[in-house]
Image 1 (cartoon, rainbow over the protein chains, first blue to last red):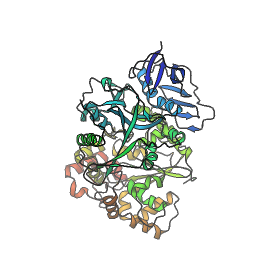
Image 2 (image 1 turned 135 degrees about the horizontal axis):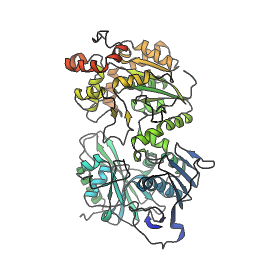
Image 3 (image 1 turned 90 degrees about the horizontal axis):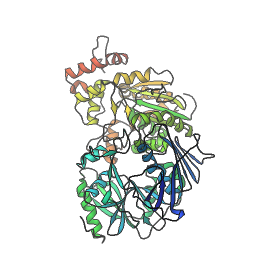
Image 4 (image 1 turned 30 degrees about the horizontal axis):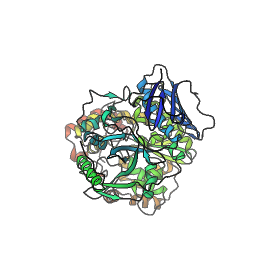
Length: 297
Length: 292
């Protein structure tokens, strides 16, 4: 059985069910297709890898990942992913690594810029937040925003934000803080207390021009402060943010891109006493002041 | 100590002087004439704390939070061997885990690539107070945890930053490290670092093959005095502090238990840990606390 999905501007033709992605039909030209199949992946890894970690290896065109007791994966040429599952492993455990590390590496192989963070739609433009800010994501979700992506920001060479996986994933402490009941939610994989919230109507399925990148920093003052910053001062820092497959990215992501049409805004946060609802309101106010008025829900 | 490439583990139960030693060591290795920015010590020593999740993620190449604790533990020995193979010099890594073994008997800390370990021990009567403050919990809680053979950190909600670390009880933690014959080990008592700093830190530096004169070591000790570290934290912050509203460097004294613990709490700690407390000079043969 083969399933068709769309994500990151690609058509994924997959032998593994991927219910967190929007279904698609197979009507896109070949270069935009990715095949995900079950098959055999070498136990020893790649020939002459240029990068090695404990569980992964990479050449310029291939990425090998070995998650003990779960699966081996081979990601090639930005077009193919082979899954070699270990005996008895469940599909959720395979899916979670396929849709995170493997898919991100595949995007890198296609020269799509990947940053840790999440992306929202706002009046037909893309707004993204660099870094891992689960509570902030949750609050935007509760205020009715639509998301292009929730874990990584994917940006193509036309400075378009690409829509990714149509779900949020939260740990119990975040769910509790957001007053969301975890009993009704499915974990990302058995034994891991990270839970899935399908985005459904909160998902924005089309690419959007990136307009604003917000970066959050702590400062010594007691108030929230917004300031435009020079991209050059922050790109290196964004790319260096510890994240999935970081060593591979460092090696491969040597060219740093600057985007003239993109505003980079630093949000300076107080060291203590920050109320996140106030922060979200302040961000909405900042967006309004910058002329990207959001209609709200 | 054998050759210069590899890992030296700086091991302790939490709140036992490990950070103090690391700051002093970083001050010496950096050959600075002033107190270093203590937030930079990881880069001087070569590594953050071993439980740092971001560090582990880089070694693995994926997000270790997608694995359960047992699956991560299974990868940890291989990860440390891999890290050791990448090193070009001695790296000093802080660890709070007890020296445990996986189900297949593989030690969590492999001997390959390991140059040795310093184990920092502190009177558990004082650890109980400091741990309670660090965890923002009552002292009775910390006493109970220190007696729990399955005690592990971090607590729920903080696993994004750190891997699960099995501390075990305070006594089992001490035993796990000192009874391990496969790694060259030096034990340093917090109380000796406090009352006999030159002599005690000299032993540490000798073990690490760090060549330093007594005068220079005394200067480093003076530069990293508790008062100076407190001032430094007030001015520049400290990334290892437990919460935004409380400092890491709190009192830094020896024998606080005499004024803080109830008699009942003292007796509970003694009952739980008398054997190891006697072995390291915290109790006399009649299980009475020794004077400092």
